[in-house]
Image (tube, rainbow, N blue to C red):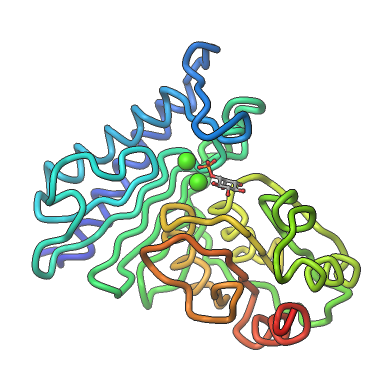
Length: 272
Ligand code: IPD
Ligand code: CA
Ligand code: CA
């Protein structure tokens, strides 16, 4: 008999592929787009439909599990907000990179992370247009489709790539680490921005990038990809240097290894 986590993982994998197929074929009409807090914070009918599909399917199979999703944080009554006994909490971003979905129709992902209490069980991030599924089950390594992922071995700062999904918030808006991060941008080999926290964390997991800073990241943005990053050999923390909380939004710092994470934090974030 399949164990508790494996059964959920298999189910999640089926659901993410089904949801991905629908988004891949989506024809986005202007009337399906609306603003949330402003013109840089958008949602589409496709974000909403995808989250509803995932929520309904997960709760139908596991009614005692809890769901934390971006678009419907309180949908589904109490059982949707709080896991019962030793059941699980699922963190869902139906489309991470909604702006890319709207303007480019690529570089967007579906993100599903599953935890039992504070313990990570598995994470899945589907790059819909590339048809690449990043996934990891705790203790079993990280993969992109069938290929095992390992973070890069790069340590020398002048050889690193830094990803940051929200350039405006990292380098232009005032915050306590801004001067240090601008210094870091000068010291690394290059800065990249894709516009999806989940995919950019997976890029660090895959060794294609070495560092990530995101000033605005929520549990549904990072809780799946952080499992994949850790299983690939990387490390993540809050930009304050504290452990990254599971259930609240936080600026994040991620790196290809624990030692690089500590070094970057000490030299560019601490005391800024
Ligand atoms: C956003 C993306 C973006 C990041 C934002 C996130 P969404 O998620 O990951 O790159 O800069 O902070 O909120 O809205 O596309 O799901
Ligand atoms: Ca997101
Ligand atoms: Ca989203």
